Image (cartoon, rainbow, N blue to C red):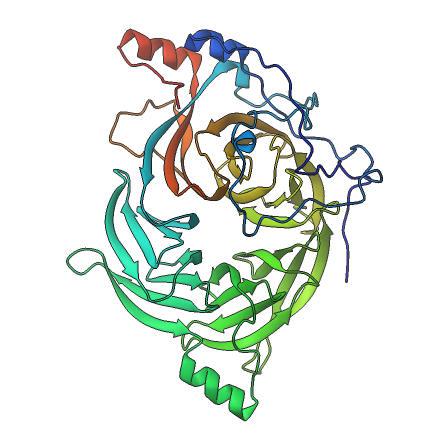
Length: 458
């Protein structure tokens, strides 16, 4: 087992029971004053306070119960996570020259219970919940256009490819639907993984008694080019399923603790995140046999905090991991060596980071502190990140997020407008859509003259 470039010291692992209050100054009502007074939160350097005085880790939030009202009133910024004053070379467009605005575009509450999973492909959004329904939404107008029904409940993980939808349920099985556009979008139930008959026969014959996960599935990942589907579970294993016939071809005992998230990269690498406070990287080895094998490439420590979620920025080669202590760690891939190197951490959340999404230069993190944070990666120094917005509106932990470029409406967008649209699902049962924009001040002034106003209201 290898380990690369772990940080010299560890950030304080903050307990959820520790609360500290501070007086916050009221923000100015005018958009000009708000832009002038906005504070940008920078990423940390790799040198951080010692971890030795905190011998414990925060409680896990896999099944987060109802939270007290004091939790819902968490401040937008964390007094325990102060802003860093690290400076770096300015990007081509300075943040001081940008008007950053965000607003809640839509908010939907269905009688489905907690929102547990989100997946997006092209202009179609899928959401899973406590119920036996997976709801389908049409973008950009965000209207419900269908449902996927099963006898099982709790769609805990979703993945979508060009022609298939995969949903993992609490019964440790995966349902598959085929998508087609013959006279509109339709879904045809294709298979259940593993099939009950195949599982029973394999168990009796002793071929593979571990074909089915022995614990709830936590995450799904697809590698279309290799024709494989990955599933991770609380049973500490990762299973590889061949998409052509939906058979289990390999089981990896990947971690010593439950696995919370997996990502399959286009280059054949597999990333796994676990409660054992590590992220592991696996490479698929091709051989003449029909059973591919995965070998461990490197183990990335995350400062003794369980890793709850992962996201990979394919354009920059950065890997992000959200942890239970509220920190968002990231690693950079060397352009020449190809090896991952620890880059630093982003701080701002007061509770566990439960979900991540990346689109372009933007990173979106959802947390148990009921907020989402939108970070922008510097165009020159990819280690430098800036917190552009704190999305406040949910009354429960944010369990899943998805992000895409573009707007959710047919409104005219200025040429200089750069931003993203975010869909967030919470354990309060509410699905929200947010729009974050970054516009040059000169463009805003011209828009105001034309009668167009940029809103900062959520």
